[in-house]
Each structure stands twice: as structure tokens, then as C-alpha cells.
Length: 175
Image (cartoon, rainbow, N blue to C red; front, side):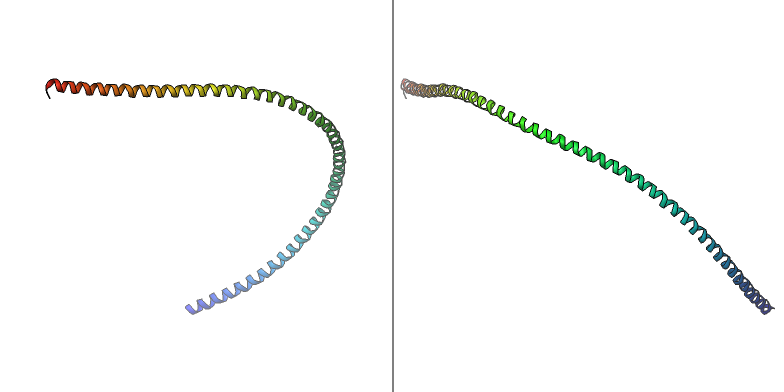
């Protein structure tokens, strides 16, 4: 009994596998046909799109080139105007620079003369101030020396007087 069931199961499995293989082959064939047809449709669509894109690109390129030409022409005109303006400014700046140089030299000479007069006056004042300051410093130094000498002399007198007092007191006490 078990063996019979096993054989039947094996037979059913083989039959089912054969049916599946036939079905798969049919499906593969249908898939290939569908794939080929879809490829044909895609190529046709791609070719028509490519043709339309090439036409659109040609139109766009023509428009772009015309605009670029107009832009280059305008740029050339601007460059020419800029060069003419630059040369005119250069000529003007040359004349202006020459005038400014002459004016600067004249002002410089005048300022140098005024500076030299001011400097001479400042040097005279500085010499006088330094002489006064030196005199004051010498006087202050002399006063300090005199005060020091007087202090020392007074201290010597004090020491002598003290010593004399001590000696007198010692003699008075009988020492």
C-alpha cells in the first residue's frame, strides 16, 4: 500500500513537471513575442523622438547663434566705446598730472621755506630753554650742596656741644 502511494506520487510529480515545462515554454515564447513587439514600439517611438529632438535642437541652435552674434556685436561696440573713452581719459590725466606736478612743486617749495623758518625759530627757542634749564639745574645743585654742608656743619656743632656738655657734667659730678 505505501509503495503504491509512493509510485503514484512519483508519477503525478513527473506528469506535473512535464506540464509545467510545456507551459513555461509556451509562456517564454509569448514573452519573446511581446518583448520583440515592445522593442519595435520603443525603437519607433525613439526614432520619432530623436528626429523631433534634432529639429528642436537645430531651431534652438539657430536662435542661440543669432542671439550670440547680436551679443558679440553689442560687446564689440561697447569695447570700442570703452577704448575711445579710455584714450580720452588717458590724455586728460596726462595733462592733469602735469598741472598737478607743477602745482605740487610750487607748494612744496613754499612749504619748505616756511618749514625752515619755523625750524630755525624752534631751534632758537630750544637753545634758550635749555640754557635756562641748565642754569636752574646748576643753581639747584649749588643749593643742595650748600644745604648739605650747612647740615653737616650744624651736626658737627651739635656733636661738639653735646660732647662738651657730657664732659662738664662728668666733672661736675666728680667723675
